[in-house]
Image (cartoon, rainbow, N blue to C red):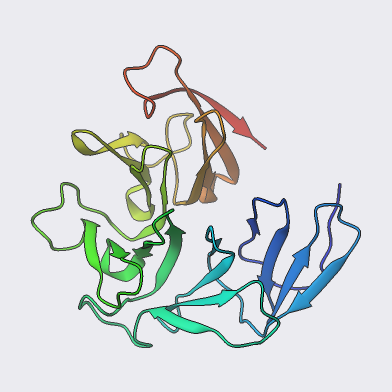
Length: 240
């Protein structure tokens, strides 16, 4: 099935629990129903780098150029939005971001941001403008260094998974802290390597999908049934 929204620059999309597709692009939000018979537009948004919808139908959008994350209710037709992270300029303090890329919101409404230019993952508790660094950065309490992270997600066990862009790898969290899980031998085009990965996602079976940018492919890392934990992966499938 081909879904077209015209000649717009699309960087991200999000599929809601109601199977709606949300595509922020070219100053508008395209909202496609689950029957794909109607496409509606609302709210003046610039093109987001990444987007997310939380459990309360609040839409989040990251803006690397303005160093902010914005939020708007999907249930409102108004064009109003709120700034929930970042101060509008690049900075390394707890209340600032510098080129925020990937975002994720958990069931507690805590916001996780891949703060690209400061090589850290920032967590903003609900209603708080100051973040805690949970991976990367210059904080000695974190257990792994990052090099320009591009995306971050949480799995069903609330462990972090991070696209470590310039290190060509995927970093995962577990009971014993952080470790590399994909691309651990450097960048490349082999089945167990990546080249500037951009984003990642899990399916309902725990399999991991990675957008492998410079190799022009989508990699599927299949959950090993005999692995020591849910986060151990084996067998790679390339999706052309």
